[in-house]
Length: 614
Figure 1: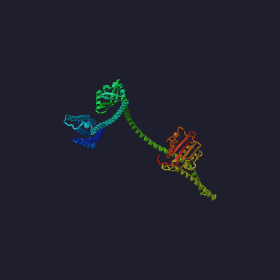
Figure 2 (figure 1 turned 30 degrees about the horizontal axis):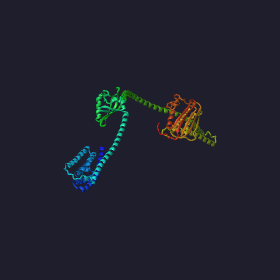
Figure 3 (figure 1 turned 120 degrees about the vertical axis):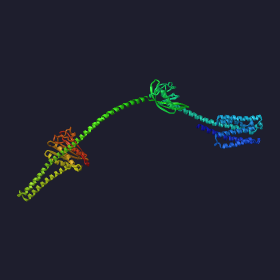
Figure 4 (figure 1 turned 45 degrees about the vertical axis):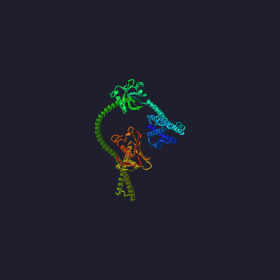
């Protein structure tokens, strides 16, 4: 369509220029004719030419608005009238007879060849009619040939007609020759591009990783090298054969290969691309599986089929193997499911038994908790026993002071010392009262120390003096160390204050000091050393028998004891451990059999114990 539009534009351009040039030369001829009429006179022929020139001017003025055919037909009519008017006046001598050659040639470039030929016959016929008229005398000849030949007007007319004819032919020929040259260049470039594309497609065709086969009329027409390798044959073996030759009789689905191939080829030729799997046979008879895409293509107005093949034999084997594995796994899963269901039934039964056992264990644990509470109370009572023994021992001396003082006062009041002067009696009475006050003070201190142990509330947290707590505990245990154990106190230079439960801290250090004293069978030394480095550290060292390495890791376990049966329930150090953990601290032990033991208590100095229940 584009080429036809370009040719139509070219033809219209030629006709427009021909009209313009024709009008110019026509005017020249008309002027020559007008001048010549002064010699030969004005007649009908001049009137016709004048009318034609007026029409010619109008057509040239409106040439871009008129259709191509109308403009061509007007040129044909204009030339015919010019030729007829010339034949009527000058006969054989007329110059416009050259148009018989010009117009058919011009029309052949613009219109069909058949119309140009008919126009040539028509113009020749008109010329022949006028020739017959002059020869037979039907048309009288009024022009003197010798005079006409020697006339300048005749030569000017011939010259204008010859130039117009020559220029018209040259112009049309030049326009078409340039167009043909341009089109020829375009055609050559397109041919070159087509050749390049053909080479590229040939390279792609031959070097494709897939096998490509072209079919024509249901037979193999072309194939690439990959296809020959796939079928294990050469080109002569494959080309010209039908797919029936390279296929087994039946396909895996049971269909006859020949029938199914015709059906698939028919659908593809009908414009329905086909994608399917197919079994082929190699030249040696070996069967292989292929995935095929089949599409219809058109080349050089001929119908072909393009088949792209991929060998999927290994893929099919892998799929079959995967299917076999899947079935095997499904069987294993089924078997395992049955086993799990059986195991689940067993677990359900076991779970029922475990629930029953758990209930029994909970009841047993509840009983153990109750028993543990009783044992802890027993341990507390043992501590109370230690306290009672210490208190009784410590209170005994001050009570003796008070009793002696009372006896002395009674004696003074019974006039047993009348022989002593009044001043001496007053002095003696003051000494007796001072002794009694000392006894009361000592009893008050013991009672104060005892009250520190009486703080049993777990929520009673306050600022506690570590040195004061240790001193209170040593006072209570003084009767156990007297005349047997030397207590060395190496205190930090400043008071050590921590936030905690004072009663529990008394219980903690009382247990550790009591254990240290009990670890010394005869005479020995207990050393208490305190230090501070962001944390309070209290070291309690004894020179006792020490702890075996085999049991040192278990000494903080509840109910574990190295004492003889009846000497303890093994809760003392467990209580120590729980108290120190509650105060966010830690307790360390270092001991060896026969070398005594060292317990180190570490408590954060600025830590406020949370009100949590143990």
